[in-house]
Length: 127
Image (cartoon, rainbow, N blue to C red; front, top):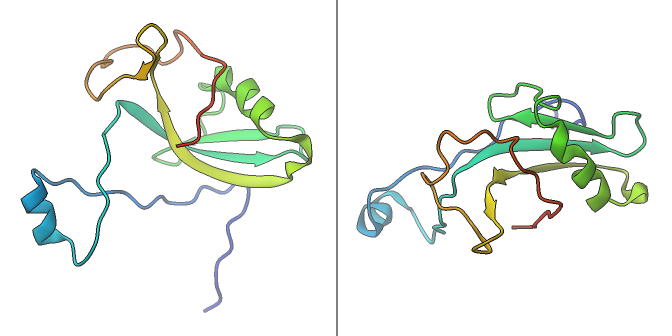
């Protein structure tokens, strides 16, 4: 069987992380060194970018649904962040709520029930 290559426009099933109740619980599950990170209250997305096509950007949800239309408010910011000569790439990330007053990303659970289209900042952060 040959090696499968990623293709722009075709969703790639993401590797999902696991959950542990404590650091000691984590150490029993991990076979070696591991990384832990803050859980932000966001929405997992996969962004397919091809600057050579008319649509430039397609956004997929965690469940592989094309959600470009629902997330169209962030497409111009993605296009601004990517150089026109960048060609094509696939980004896997998280849409999070940034509190501009406190200048921080909101922690998990603090924005439940808020509509994701209420405010769009013109900032993209590489995490």
